[in-house]
Image (cartoon, rainbow, N blue to C red; front, side):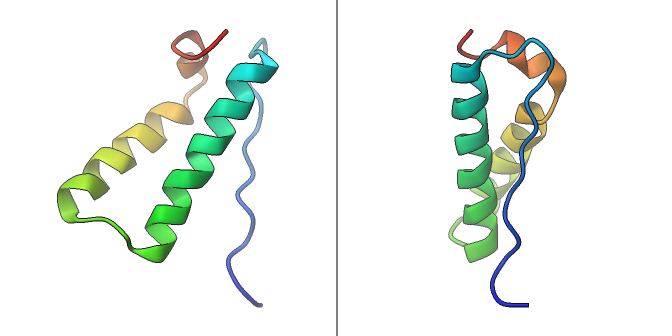
Amino acid sequence: MDGWPPVNTRRFDGESERSFRWRATRINEIISTFRTGRYDAGAGEELEQELMTLQMPSHRELTLN
């Protein structure tokens, strides 16, 4: 297998298209950062927390609806 598998983000029920696109883009950015190792330990913890938050259905209330 060449390269990394694609990042797949599912749209939450009731999530606006704008919110979904923003959230999917940000999730992809975070995972790409992890894959390339371009972060320090403190930033890694913050990114991990942000990623977990973005993957929770309750996050849709916090995004661009």
